Length: 359
Image 1: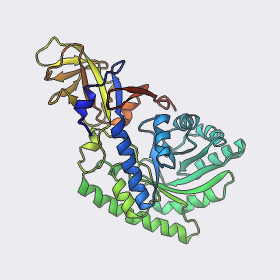
Image 2: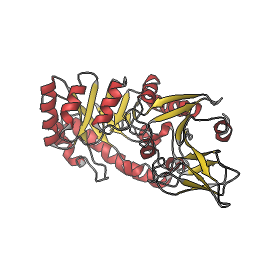
Image 3: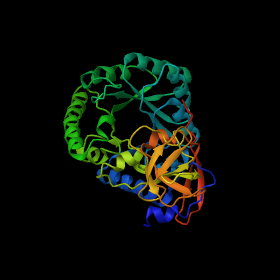
């Protein structure tokens, strides 16, 4: 595959700032993750909260994924209306969201995680009112402290779910978000400790007559560990498709950068730097610094909402394009309306980020 710098130099997006996906790298990343899952007999349910794009989601499903994860009710709606027929909401659903999810379940297979009996009853009442069935997963907290029942509470909640009409007990979710960006040795050690507890929990549920149909979780950083552990029947990676600086800096993941941001130099009045049209509204500040790909050996410094500095200029002048890799992909994608997907010859195709504004 050609170096990124050679391909990016041929791409001329119609506007800037613009998120550009290198199609060949995207396809290689998708194929690599699907092959790894297939080799272990584990289902891939790619996480759509990263790309928020039904076109990309359909591509993942065509390649073998069973469906998409999403983080909000609105994302689920956007994906189903965009042709995705199996979605799982992996974050807590607010009370107003259950009726909307239940209505959506008349059109597609819809699942959601639950971490309280109150949520389970809300889900059941909504499903019955809509004449639908929702897949219900017990959300287990692996130590993040964000949501989910402690492992010792999973059995009682699973029992509640199995006793409610309108709900289909679909299994458990155990997502270790706090492990994803750890360096390799620490990540492996903490993953092994958690996996031991999760394996025990699955056995406890089985002994209680509540064997989980699916054990879902995992992510891009832990995917290889998740697949090797033999506990997860389904994994939920997202960023692997296009990557970002944060995941790339881990150094041990078999996926390549596929997403870049093109910006135009709008001022070249200073010897120390040039100013481009990409600030906080184009590149989310969460995570590590954005990385300059072209010009090589330069750095990016935000200069407000609409602007950033490229320093040193590296030969870039007024009107030239500069190229960056986002530090954290998910919130950066949420700032844009579309991807421009580039072939190796520079030809572009526009893919709407149709779940971007969904709540």
